[in-house]
Image 1 (tube, rainbow, N blue to C red):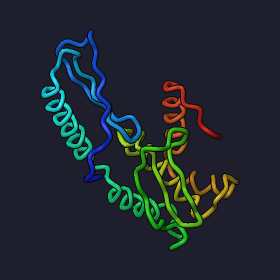
Image 2: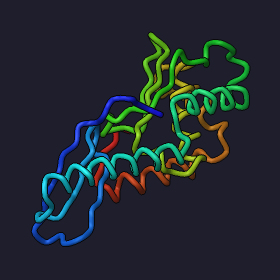
Image 3: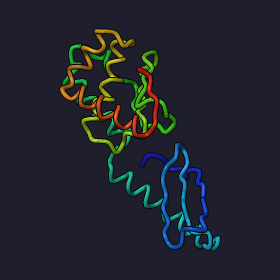
Amino acid sequence: MAGLRKPVVEVRRSQRRRRTVSAYRDGERVVVLIPDQFSRAEETEWVDRMLARLAAREERLGRSDEELLLRSRRLIDRYLSEHGRVAVPASVRWVTNQNGRWGSCTPADRTIRISHRIQEMPDWVIDYVLLHELAHLVVPSHNARFWELVGRYPKTERARGYLEGVAATAGIVLPD
């Protein structure tokens, strides 16, 4: 499981909400929406229940940091094999603090961070974002050589279009 510590939980009570309870992640915290008339005991029960549901859902997705590292190795073997160890990251992990980009790479320490916002996107989109960041280990800038490496992935244009559509719908302004 991604983390053993309990996340920060924000409970929002609603007078309009009668029976339903829902929860979602918002960055590092979990927001739980409950009816206003719930007692403190019911609130505690539902917070625990919703945290368990979110954890189970994330586990079902199977999108752990370890899975990201395995995925990156497959992508390196397939698209960046001639670059050997240069293309191998020191770490690849999901993060919840990237709101203005899908992923980031720090070539100096060979670390890659992938936004949790893409965890539920199709595999081919995740592969594109991951390959984009892996390519930065070989070419730090967005020059022609970099785009040649990224362009080896056959669904590059499709994935870029998908991500642009998601960003436009969500009102996210991404850097070029």
